[in-house]
Image 1 (cartoon, helix red, strand yellow):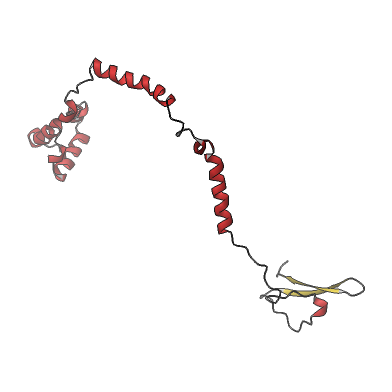
Image 2: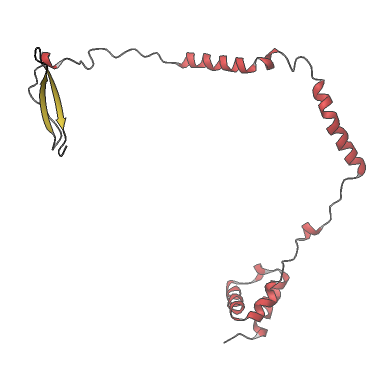
Length: 166
């Protein structure tokens, strides 16, 4: 069942005038259903473009020939002004700027460097196994400890812990 044309005329007029914000959600839904069902109504709105914003239609005054001449004169004079720079602008600081920056970075690094002392030997003593007697060895669940003596004289015991399945 198609709605009558008279019922939808206000919605069509709003779309043609570019006042989509004036339509309620129900009106937009009815208009969408009508356009999906009626190809003639869809063709009527297919070629519509929204009206131009009045602020964008207003013509803009172009610069005059004298204004363009003034701009080009400034552009052409810019390299000449750059060449007339004073010796203070091209002085020793500008020539040595990369070297001075590198020296400043080096000085900053030396100033903030922390000199570490090696850990004291009493914190965690490491000793050969032949001077230590191992009474108990705790390993993770499923692991197997294995002690092997390497060498014929003064054998050095090596402790291996093997994981289960390896």
